[in-house]
Length: 170
Image (tube, rainbow, N blue to C red; front, side, top):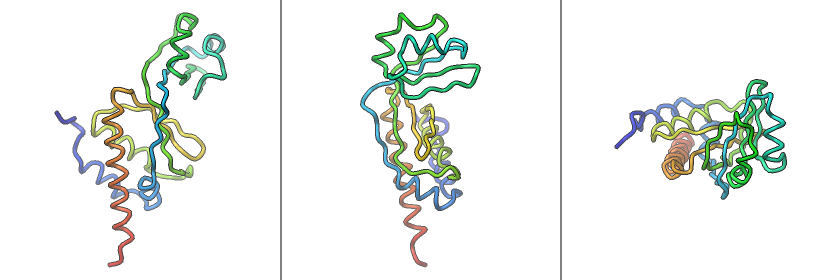
Protein backbone atom coordinates (compact mmCIF):
# COMPACT_ATOMS: atom_id res chain seq x y z
CA UNK A 1 0.00 0.00 0.00
CA UNK A 2 1.36 3.40 -0.89
CA UNK A 3 1.61 6.22 1.58
CA UNK A 4 -0.63 9.29 0.98
CA UNK A 5 2.49 11.43 0.42
CA UNK A 6 4.00 8.97 -2.06
CA UNK A 7 3.59 11.13 -5.16
CA UNK A 8 7.01 10.82 -6.88
CA UNK A 9 6.54 14.21 -8.54
CA UNK A 10 6.68 15.83 -5.09
CA UNK A 11 10.38 14.96 -4.70
CA UNK A 12 11.16 15.77 -8.33
CA UNK A 13 9.41 19.15 -8.14
CA UNK A 14 11.29 20.06 -4.96
CA UNK A 15 14.66 19.06 -6.44
CA UNK A 16 13.88 21.11 -9.57
CA UNK A 17 13.53 24.21 -7.41
CA UNK A 18 16.75 23.80 -5.41
CA UNK A 19 19.92 25.82 -5.99
CA UNK A 20 22.55 23.92 -8.02
CA UNK A 21 24.88 23.76 -5.01
CA UNK A 22 22.21 21.99 -2.94
CA UNK A 23 21.42 19.59 -5.76
CA UNK A 24 25.14 18.80 -6.07
CA UNK A 25 25.40 18.25 -2.30
CA UNK A 26 22.46 15.83 -2.44
CA UNK A 27 23.96 14.01 -5.43
CA UNK A 28 27.24 13.62 -3.57
CA UNK A 29 25.70 12.45 -0.31
CA UNK A 30 26.71 9.07 1.06
CA UNK A 31 24.95 7.34 3.95
CA UNK A 32 26.91 5.98 6.88
CA UNK A 33 24.79 3.96 9.30
CA UNK A 34 26.25 3.44 12.73
CA UNK A 35 26.14 -0.21 13.77
CA UNK A 36 24.73 0.41 17.21
CA UNK A 37 21.06 1.13 17.95
CA UNK A 38 20.28 4.29 19.90
CA UNK A 39 17.59 5.45 22.31
CA UNK A 40 16.30 8.99 22.73
CA UNK A 41 15.72 9.92 26.37
CA UNK A 42 14.05 13.11 27.55
CA UNK A 43 13.49 14.68 30.97
CA UNK A 44 12.53 18.15 32.18
CA UNK A 45 15.62 20.40 32.01
CA UNK A 46 15.68 20.63 35.81
CA UNK A 47 16.46 16.88 35.92
CA UNK A 48 19.43 17.07 33.56
CA UNK A 49 21.97 16.19 36.26
CA UNK A 50 19.91 13.17 37.35
CA UNK A 51 19.77 11.83 33.81
CA UNK A 52 23.48 12.40 33.21
CA UNK A 53 24.32 10.66 36.50
CA UNK A 54 22.19 7.68 35.44
CA UNK A 55 23.51 7.45 31.87
CA UNK A 56 27.01 8.84 32.31
CA UNK A 57 28.32 11.74 30.25
CA UNK A 58 30.89 9.86 28.17
CA UNK A 59 28.34 7.41 26.77
CA UNK A 60 25.91 9.63 24.87
CA UNK A 61 26.00 10.86 21.31
CA UNK A 62 23.96 14.07 21.28
CA UNK A 63 22.59 16.26 24.07
CA UNK A 64 20.11 19.09 23.68
CA UNK A 65 19.14 21.37 26.56
CA UNK A 66 16.69 24.13 25.64
CA UNK A 67 15.98 25.12 29.24
CA UNK A 68 12.61 23.32 29.23
CA UNK A 69 13.57 19.81 28.16
CA UNK A 70 16.85 17.90 28.22
CA UNK A 71 17.25 15.22 25.55
CA UNK A 72 19.97 12.63 25.13
CA UNK A 73 20.70 10.35 22.22
CA UNK A 74 22.56 7.42 23.76
CA UNK A 75 23.46 3.86 22.80
CA UNK A 76 20.43 1.61 23.35
CA UNK A 77 22.41 -0.99 25.28
CA UNK A 78 23.64 1.64 27.72
CA UNK A 79 20.18 3.08 28.29
CA UNK A 80 18.77 -0.42 28.88
CA UNK A 81 21.57 -1.25 31.36
CA UNK A 82 20.71 1.89 33.33
CA UNK A 83 16.92 1.99 32.87
CA UNK A 84 16.20 1.49 36.56
CA UNK A 85 18.44 4.47 37.42
CA UNK A 86 16.68 6.94 35.10
CA UNK A 87 14.59 9.72 36.70
CA UNK A 88 10.94 8.72 37.12
CA UNK A 89 9.87 11.49 34.74
CA UNK A 90 11.93 10.14 31.85
CA UNK A 91 10.49 9.45 28.44
CA UNK A 92 12.30 7.15 26.05
CA UNK A 93 11.96 5.80 22.52
CA UNK A 94 14.01 2.79 21.53
CA UNK A 95 15.68 1.16 18.54
CA UNK A 96 16.83 4.07 16.42
CA UNK A 97 19.49 4.08 13.73
CA UNK A 98 21.89 7.03 13.75
CA UNK A 99 22.69 7.82 10.11
CA UNK A 100 25.45 10.19 9.09
CA UNK A 101 24.70 12.05 5.85
CA UNK A 102 28.20 12.30 4.42
CA UNK A 103 28.05 15.58 2.53
CA UNK A 104 29.79 18.81 3.35
CA UNK A 105 27.01 21.30 3.96
CA UNK A 106 27.84 24.94 4.52
CA UNK A 107 25.37 26.66 6.81
CA UNK A 108 23.93 28.63 3.89
CA UNK A 109 22.84 25.45 2.06
CA UNK A 110 19.15 25.87 1.19
CA UNK A 111 16.69 22.97 0.93
CA UNK A 112 18.90 19.98 1.74
CA UNK A 113 16.88 18.97 4.81
CA UNK A 114 13.61 19.68 3.00
CA UNK A 115 14.62 17.27 0.23
CA UNK A 116 15.60 14.57 2.73
CA UNK A 117 12.37 14.92 4.68
CA UNK A 118 10.23 15.05 1.53
CA UNK A 119 11.76 11.77 0.34
CA UNK A 120 11.16 10.17 3.75
CA UNK A 121 7.60 11.50 4.01
CA UNK A 122 6.86 10.04 0.58
CA UNK A 123 7.39 6.56 2.07
CA UNK A 124 5.77 7.30 5.43
CA UNK A 125 8.97 7.46 7.48
CA UNK A 126 9.41 9.85 10.40
CA UNK A 127 12.94 10.94 11.31
CA UNK A 128 14.85 13.32 13.49
CA UNK A 129 17.57 15.58 12.10
CA UNK A 130 20.66 16.81 13.88
CA UNK A 131 22.97 19.31 12.25
CA UNK A 132 26.68 19.20 12.91
CA UNK A 133 29.01 21.93 11.78
CA UNK A 134 29.45 20.56 8.24
CA UNK A 135 27.20 17.51 7.99
CA UNK A 136 23.79 16.34 9.09
CA UNK A 137 22.62 13.24 10.93
CA UNK A 138 19.31 11.40 10.79
CA UNK A 139 17.67 9.37 13.47
CA UNK A 140 15.36 6.72 12.00
CA UNK A 141 13.56 3.90 13.77
CA UNK A 142 15.25 0.60 12.97
CA UNK A 143 11.98 -0.93 11.70
CA UNK A 144 11.67 1.95 9.19
CA UNK A 145 15.31 1.92 8.10
CA UNK A 146 14.89 -0.30 4.99
CA UNK A 147 12.20 2.04 3.59
CA UNK A 148 14.18 5.11 4.60
CA UNK A 149 17.35 3.80 2.99
CA UNK A 150 15.54 3.01 -0.28
CA UNK A 151 13.96 6.49 -0.31
CA UNK A 152 17.28 8.22 0.41
CA UNK A 153 19.13 6.14 -2.20
CA UNK A 154 16.44 7.09 -4.77
CA UNK A 155 16.72 10.78 -3.76
CA UNK A 156 20.50 10.75 -4.15
CA UNK A 157 20.24 8.98 -7.53
CA UNK A 158 17.64 11.47 -8.80
CA UNK A 159 19.76 14.42 -7.63
CA UNK A 160 22.73 12.87 -9.43
CA UNK A 161 20.75 12.54 -12.68
CA UNK A 162 19.43 16.09 -12.40
CA UNK A 163 22.92 17.44 -11.65
CA UNK A 164 24.30 15.62 -14.71
CA UNK A 165 21.52 17.07 -16.89
CA UNK A 166 22.34 20.57 -15.63
CA UNK A 167 25.93 20.05 -16.79
CA UNK A 168 24.94 18.93 -20.32
CA UNK A 169 25.77 21.36 -23.08
CA UNK A 170 22.72 22.21 -25.27
